[in-house]
Amino acid sequence: MQNLTYDYVIIGAGPVGLYAANKIRKTKKTYVVLEKEKKCGGQPTFLYPEKIVTNFPTAKKILGDKIAKKIIGSNKLNIVYKTTVESIKKNKNNQYKIICNKKTFTAANVIICFGLGKFQHISLDLFNKNPKVTYEVKKIKQFKNKNVIILGGGDSANDYAKQIKDVAASTTLIYHNEKLKNENKKIDGIKYFLGWNVFGTPYDGSLEIEDNVVKTHLVLPYDYIIVQYGYKIINTPSFNKKIKILNNKIVVNKKQETSMKNIYACGDCCHYDKKTYTIKDGFDEVDKILKI
Image 1 (cartoon, rainbow, N blue to C red):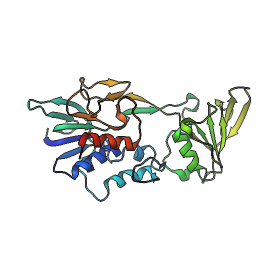
Image 2 (image 1 turned 45 degrees about the vertical axis):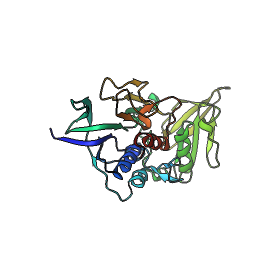
Image 3 (image 1 turned 60 degrees about the vertical axis):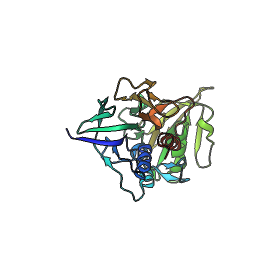
Image 4 (image 1 turned 90 degrees about the vertical axis):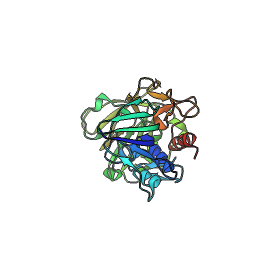
């Protein structure tokens, strides 16, 4: 295997990994970004390319698939694609060997930014193999002049509802609690059923819902259902047994350092007390590591 040596190896080419790479690029330090997919961008690119992101640090509103380009700009970053990290081992020189499927890299420092790791959307068995039910939105235009039902009350459900209402024939949001999550507010153009649960699908293209209190039932027609109940993490790779993981998150200290010296983690993959999970938080965590 080829062995390449750098000051920093960054694992993951999502927004946080790209930000770290771009920051190191401006110095005399050497780096490489290892990305398992064939292109960069992470969750915004692959999961919600046409969703309007409002918590991006340098833009009030930006589409998910534009975030990577916004970070990189006209710069060329050193990214190796289709590369899966298998393990990290310390060598005799107190550096780290990052062993991958294709090559082995060596670095004094490792920054882990792989996002959520391996996860799956929380689904409903009721909708198994239903082509009209989706958990990811790749193209908003597919809902043009359609009756769309969105299940969920969090940020993603509300964000999609706001966008889709402008193209859909009707947009309905159903949530089992009587209040939307995270201080989201009702907006005009969306029909809400708060405090209602999914009950069944009596016939094709229909959804039966039940009021939590009085147990009233309604049957709603739909062309598409978008399920936004969140996700569950299946596996968080640590790459080394000495890296501490708690509840599928890599534990870090105030310097973003893991339980192994000079191995850091930032973004959605890590945890510390009172951590919040936004792109800006990930950028701030990179700043703590690099202090450039």
